[in-house]
Image 1 (cartoon, one colour):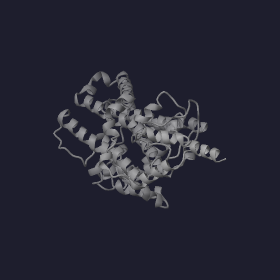
Image 2 (cartoon, rainbow, N blue to C red):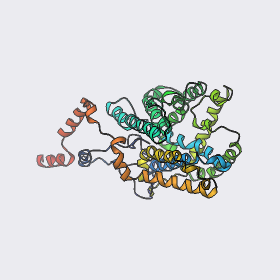
Image 3 (cartoon, rainbow, N blue to C red):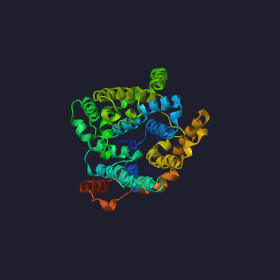
Image 4 (cartoon, rainbow, N blue to C red):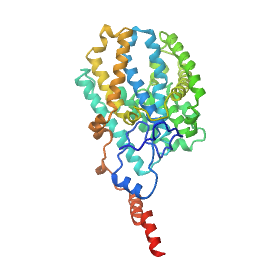
Length: 402
């Protein structure tokens, strides 16, 4: 299912989008016959860059921790400030990586199929599963709804829209300013937070477009030692600001889903907060990337299963919330908060492992050949490759001719 990673200790420039799988969507399984043909042809196998797998894993751990803090942070100003800081950059980091690996996306049939099977189908499956879970386990009585993403599902909905628009952003002369303008307009519309997570689609779009605009050398620059040193006081300052802002600022600003009017603020604060949050996200994400290891680590392979951890850990968090486990007073102190944080990190780590990937692959990475027509161009290329002599056969023919 996965491509080879570089050897431990090896540092190199980030792989090109064509050589690296999607940032969050699962990597489709490559048939053994394709691997065999690639080996026989003498072409070097595509390698994954450990940096991106490491970044995805660390980001998904922060996501799970943030979700576990939501029910218990009300009693702690420190945890409230930490929550706001983490929510400033953890999803933007995911989205920037997703945008970076969408640079090669076009409307080619095989890529559209992958978008459907890797994003749209998981959205439909898990939106259905979460709706049933909320109704029967949470006893909320909310009606079944596929067009209003619940809880975690907004990201898949947004990723589907963003990736479809990737070819359009490549045609725009100044894509990032245009995306920021659209995000600011989204912060003014009171109805933007409705169906298909439109508010988040618009307000997080600049992060995706930023990823589209980035090049391998930009990520290489983020790995410079001096930036790692500078990131320490930057994060320290962010934590101080988060502690100060905790009792003064509505957390809903960090979710980027509501218009300013819906948060009880003047309309003109929406565009200003959009710019401020984007700036904070860029700075903190850069500092986060500076500390992501480039070498292969014990959690590098887990970064390949971040979609599994992302979609599955929500059931654990919500199950604990529905049953009131996180309301236990013992958890609303420093030791309890540390225990919840560690448990959340351990849970999402386990959910990213190979056994869970095998169990839920039917929903995350469905093959669905039955649903699509055969690509005539791809079949023609395959037949042409089969008809061409392999390098070894070519050498034998040349020797025999001599």
